[in-house]
Length: 250
Image (tube, rainbow, N blue to C red; front, side, top):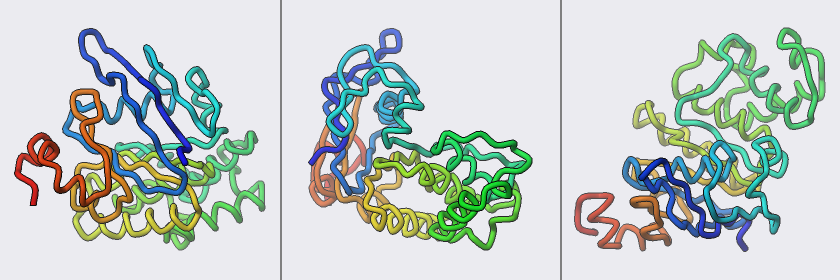
């Protein structure tokens, strides 16, 4: 069953059709990869769904409700969250307080940045639980700035996950890290998301990761959906191999 769906969604930037009449859906509980060459429209599509960009036309449905004109905050409350390709952390706060900020935002609470988790035991305990899921509990009292790049990536996902989303969008969660760290990050993220029963949409260029972790793959090209299907179907698709991989299918 589709949890999230776009219907004929479109966005232009001048003469560029960044997203062109896209029908896209995310099913409950699935781990989906959104792939395509640079400029294919992937990030714009996610920006439209998360309300960071406003659509020119089309609709966005979430949980059976039309959220096309809903704000960023309204979509977060509904259950849509995202992490970014460029890690967006508060380096001057501890690892735990970065997660606590998300929990406070989710609960509609306000706190001084100088007494975040310390002032709320329930939030502190929940932040620790989230960090434990991502293997970061031992780092909770460190400043975020002190983390290695792979750990920063995991913390960025943990911050988004703390919002308790029904759909979590991850923008290149393995970019900028070594091969060994990529597997560790994806093993952790996939296990956490699947254990929590939510859905995840990963924008990713590393096709080894895409084929290893995805339940379904959606390929975008020139603002539209070129193909979608199980990893083995996408691997065997000649159009995808030509446009995306620059090879013939194997």
